[in-house]
Length: 261
Image 1: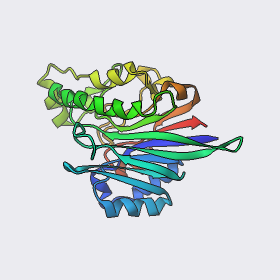
Image 2: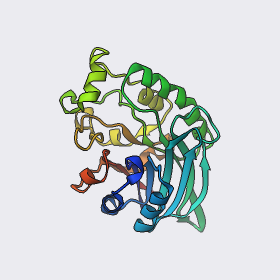
Image 3: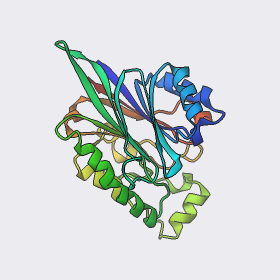
């Protein structure tokens, strides 16, 4: 059984873009979508209804713009809003458990952690994200020894990502230029050192890494689907999904990972 998991920042709640967002999800044939910037509850439910999926939404009481959500073809049997419980998160963090099928009459349930970390590329911003990681790893500890997924908008660069500076937005280049054209890469490095697998990196060399941000200036990848070591051998593919419709749906291209379950 193949299962597709998508990490997708829908940009400011998806205002005015529910139709193209739904079309991107349909084209990807996604089973579970980790949604960043699910700001607007009504629009989130409209999107869920449009694609015919179960849903869970998690607001951050300290940041109304920090909501994340999950859309799922599979039944969501548990959902926890960790941003409401842990003040280390600046935006959103949650986990869901979905039923993925049966094996010898035993229903299997897969934990999926969704997160949206602090934004921007400066050393100071990376320090904020590093402060969020203990909270994220604490969620992962709930599933120690059990295969699980960690996906979302990390707003962070892979240690081996080749960044095309010419393609970045002018505001991004201005911030990076002030720190000697160097970008910090500590967050993703820490996730990898924790034992998580970058599913995209399993199938592409650094020179072939896809770029997810932005759709108009695609200079780097900040969106990830990580899996715990137990699931590494089950990764069939992981791509930055770039149908033409995606340019009209959001400022992020989604990352789609397929697992053999």
